Length: 544
Length: 96
Ligand code: SF4
Image (cartoon, rainbow over all chains, first blue to last red; front, side):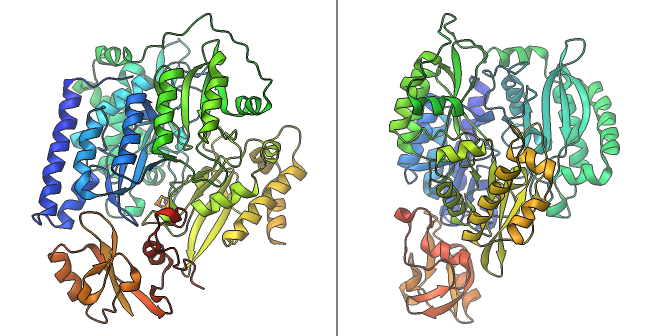
């Protein structure tokens, strides 16, 4: 894992002290809320529906156990005993007191964490593949690149006041586990025909009220020019992005309005200019960063066989583990989606336990996924059973990864001041309706995603089944959509028709799964059947 | 009726203006501000007794003043999915 150098640490510590003074001045009445609000937002502190909410950055979703323990400590000491892992691989605390916020940031700083750039019109936390460094199918570990982008984008003076927020994802495999093409910039690391490492750039993706899939604008940027190219993409956006209309200010609108070709032309022109300035970080810097991400000291003699005689363990292994690049090891997914639970929530005790388990079984490493789960990336297969038993004892072993109950749900109207409707109760009711694991496995991979408003933090546009909460004359109503995907088969879901009330949407989800079971062919997933048969059979089941 | 609400500056708690009694965590204590809302809020914000305040339309019910909009009812209640953390679990969230 990357370790802060003296500059990183000094910058974060200075920011904590600056915010301590700003908070003191606000509490003393020297700053008005209008003056203070942008300052607290720059430090990830929102005022939400019930209290202040602090969003803590987890760079590319990677944590060590000490950092995870700190997240548990904050939940216990300053919040109400839990935290919420988000679709941006971050964690949010819902019950923060303003007077505690500087102390929390100081505590975070002791473990090289912060909440900087988790809000505002700047480059947000860089996201990546949660299996980075462990996946059998990656061509390289994307995290050194994500870290390079993090350093480049942190406090970047030119990009601190962009037209709107900006999200970048980096992956290094053909399987997209990070919804890469639904980011403002999606970067896929690849080898070209000559075997040289570089990146494909996709620009102008996003969800929100105008969802778009980012088009590819460059099929190969040499690795040592990656930052230059990203900078050129941002410069064109910063210059021409719409600042007059918040709803048209994201880069996706610029790329769409200019057209991909014209936007690309401008980026290439800027890129050619950038290259004359010699601003790209030296190759030695990437080499320095890469040294922080060595492979762990695997036991190369580890047994690759697993004893699956315990049927519950077998189900969990089948569903929640993923192939590791090292024989004898597996990637273990910890689902934060118990039946009837709150997607992404974990108690302080669970957070601490996951930290302890990472230390014991996964070379001290954890990952947060955009699907609001936790990953232990490097677990010896021979130790999986012991790990599973400990997870099970703590309610952390739902065997439902990528099944219908492994839902993404945003906080919705239970916590979020922008919400139109509650997301979590809908997730809970669907989870209960489909609680039988046999039934879930029969339905197979089915990504259900729920947002409480058009901002789409719950990725409903990318759901095989998507649900959007809307306000219909003061009453919660839920629109159903089908056919989305955030993976390598990326697509945007389409609305089925009129919305449903809270119970009606649960019935509607059941009806569309019945259509799938009736009409599927071979080993088609739900989304495959939808793509083959189209919307009509689903509409008939829902509305006739 | 018009209620006044906002957050406690230090703690962030949702609070309701309760007339002479100051600010309360409980919507049941809320007082009708009539047409005086803007003036009261300007005074209270300046004294830092409330933060991010605004006026909420409400109706008188058997359970006391009740905001009309679901969002304000959730604020008055606390998260409906964590009733252990809620402040007033008997608030009807969905306006019957
Ligand atoms: S989608 Fe809307 S309701 Fe949900 S967290 Fe985002 S802003 Fe809030």
